[in-house]
Image 1 (cartoon, rainbow, N blue to C red):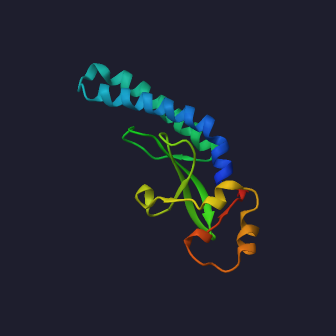
Image 2: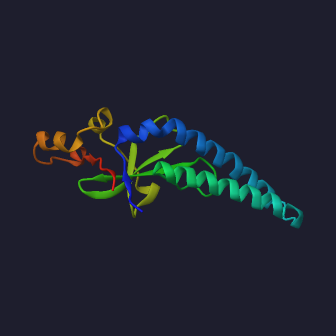
Image 3: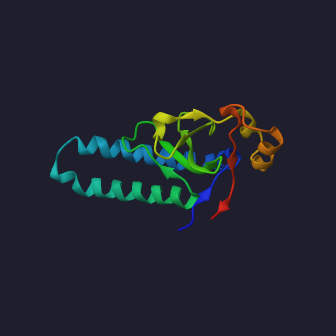
Length: 151
């Protein structure tokens, strides 16, 4: 399966749908945790139903091209595949945030989150040429996100 790479602008355009799906995951995930805590065999069918519904919502996010990451169902974290300076990274959004404004490396996870440079948040259409116009790299603010569509 090919990976869809997002710009910050594209990831932010998907947020209305992603936010709704994550709300559903969190609601069902918290209910699943509550019922699982009761430790009763009678709850098995309900746990299975909730688990299947959560799985379907995760598949919805996958169809959009992003990945759900909060298995404790506390806040809802979603990663959007992207490229910064040719390196595969994730644009990272938490359900308590208004916009996608952070990214992290593939290996570092949410603990390695850094703010996306402001100039990349303004326009997601031609980020590679903006970097070339900016000249040589002076600091980490000159990193760019490359949009690739479906690959």
